[in-house]
Length: 173
Image (tube, rainbow, N blue to C red; front, side, top):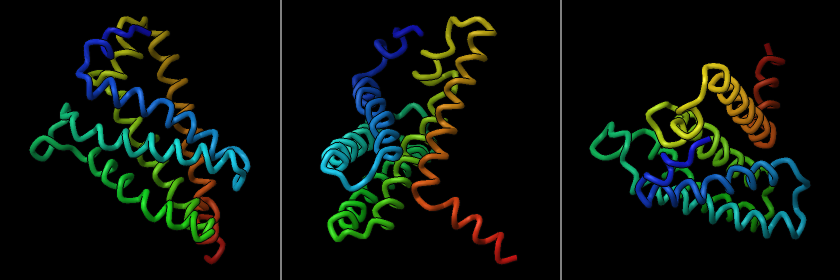
């Protein structure tokens, strides 16, 4: 995986990658591990800080210009920044269901959905993963990254309770 596309990218992109990659890994760990522990609370604060920093950094990245200098991906950044407040409030008042829904939604939108957009060949991460790779290596890399994103999305959906709600809709019919 060549690092040249990242090293040649603007500082805002480098900062974004430096915050989003640990946020993606830490978020998956937090979603998968037991909740309510002191470690969960400490790491959750670090994760939320990383997510907010990642989201703010997107406002200095203007590769995809849909409306002015912004794109629909920037809406996910607003969602994460604004969503962090009710996530914190829910945790403080011990409303675990609401807290879980907020953070899982932020992970799903801010990491999984936004992550899919970064894999386009003309984006920095897409170039890092796919440039210079043979056909087989490119397909293998796409399969691995896709599997990781699907697994992360499934984990977030399970933690948010979306799976149970979806199943409940079909049980009523």
